[in-house]
Structure formats: C-alpha cells, structure tokens
Image (cartoon, rainbow over the protein chains, first blue to last red):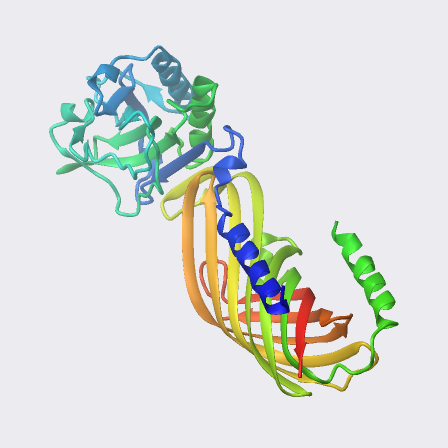
Length: 212
Length: 205
C-alpha cells in the first residue's frame, strides 16, 4: 500500500471514530444528578407584604390523559412539605375564603407519557390545556416577561404563588418553582426525589420570606 | 498513559536517528497525523478549569523548496468538565442542577512553514496557520442543553521539528498556540496551547 493510501485510510478511520462520538450527559449522570429544580420570581414584588396563603389540598394534573386526572397518594406528602416550607418562612395558611394574600397552586405536568421537552409557564392555560385550579379564577393570569424555564419534561411538579390582592385586571404569578421530571421518571425514588426538589426550590429562594 | 508517550517517542527517535542519513532536504510532500495535548489559557481555562484536553489533526505540507512549505491542517480538539450540583442564577430566578460543559473546536487552517537545514535527523521549523475555527459550545444543566456553534477567524503560530526515521516515515514534535475570535457567554476569545506529536509520511523528490 502506498504512503498516500495508508494516510487516507487512516483519515477514514479517524473520521468514522469521531463522527460516532455523541455528547449525551444523561449517559454519564446518575438519576439524582439528572433532576433539575427551576425557580422564577417577580423582582418587583415585595414578599414582605405577604402574610397569609391558601392552598388546595391536591396536586392538580395538567395533562392530555384524563385517566391520570386523579388524586395521587403522594399529593398529600407534597402539599404537606410545601406547607412546612412556607411555615418555616413565616407564611400562615388560611382558608381560601379567608381573604388570603396569595394562593398557592400545585400542578402535576403530564403532557405525554413518553416524556418530552417543553417550556412551561403557567398562564392559566397551556397549549389548550387548562389547569383545573386556574379556571376557578375569574381574571387572567399574568407572568413577568423574564420568567423562564429552559425546558421541563413530562412528569414535572410545578408550584405557583399567585398574588390575589394587589392585582386588578390580572392575577400575577409572583413566584414559580418546578421540579423537573421527577414525578414519572423511569428512575426509582420518584417521591423522595420530588420531595428533595421541593425543599431545594424553597432553599434556592431566600427572598421568599413572609412579612411580620 | 500520557506519561509514557514522551519517553517512548524519545526512545524511537534516538534509535532511529542513528540509522538515518542527514539529508531531509528533498521532501516534496509530507502528510501527518498528530496528537495534541492541549493546555487551556484565558477564557477557555476559566470555562473548564482544567489544564489538559485531547485533540488530533491531519495535515498536508507541500514543499516549494527545501526551506518553505505551504499546506492544509484540519484538526479537532475536545474537552468536557463536570460540576457538582449548584444553584445558578438566571434572569428571573435560579436553577439547581449539575453542570456538564463541553467545548470542541475544529481548526481548518492554511499553513506556511520555514525550515532550517537538517541537523542529523532533525529539521527544525517555525510557521503559522491561518483560517477558520469551527467552535461548538455546549453547556448542560443536568439534561437541559444550552448550545452555541460558531465559525470564526483564528491563527496558530507553531514551532517544532521534523524527525526523520526511515522509509519516508518520520515524527513531528511541535508547540502550537491557538487563538480564535470566538465570543459567547464566558468567552471573549478562544486561546489554548498545544504540545503536538505527529507521525509523518513523506514523499521525496
């Protein structure tokens, strides 16, 4: 074989070897490392003005699969953990008819069973899908324009804090947190991972303190 | 593995140099495969916080006379960096995730080198490569991807030596400094140094 042919053969092997390389961190990360927790908040909102909140005692499913629109046994655990975190930050839970400062909506995002990347911001309606909780409000939801979720996957838990007092024409979401993908993940420990995620959402939001 | 490369190359050179003639001045064309140990500098160093990454290149040099060659070099450099779970700021909040950073670049360079006369089996040279750096930036927050690909101008001064073995085979040892006008997020420019080891095939006149 001539030197040029030998050289060209080597190039072909190198090209094949490097073209087969694919960057996929999911292959290198444990399932706990794949969990992502995203929070957004309204920078113009003063959380010191908030003292009381109301919360539904369920996690509302936002989905295209009606058979999943049932209360999950883990919902009670998640709601309880959210209440614990809010209480630690000085928020007082009241009944929804007791004129709360904010309403907390907890949603389970189930857009399809296979898992799919999408960006989600709760504006009351997402891509034609209505959050059962949000239709209870007569005014539209409003979200600051800089709220951003890089992507979430099916099976995410979303928590929205809605300002129901100072808003007039619209109901402003002042804080949002999403535990990405842990709810229906193929990996084990979904409940514990979601609980870890809920705690992380509050821990990474140090401004979330009720007024005295 | 890397710590054995230099001693092995030195041994090959010393053994082979005893059996080669001095003349290395009649090369017409030279092709080579090169392995590069990269040392990040500047913004790249702060992005990966790591001194070493791997790369390779293939190269052709066409000699105008015994002292000057023009050619083409196509390479690939790749590295990755893993960061433990941390909370990162976004425009309106925070994201908690592990972070995996990837950066690879494909330099496609026209080269020009000036060679000194051969000294035993060695033929020292210096020169520069000028052309395009296709740079691929990928940052993952766990599995959420932020990606940016850009082709930009760059150049690469290089100094090294050809080492003749036998039957047209040889080695190349060189140092290269890469600079490209890549700018994105952490980068205002792309800089890295390469220690390069090559296996060459030469066709003589």
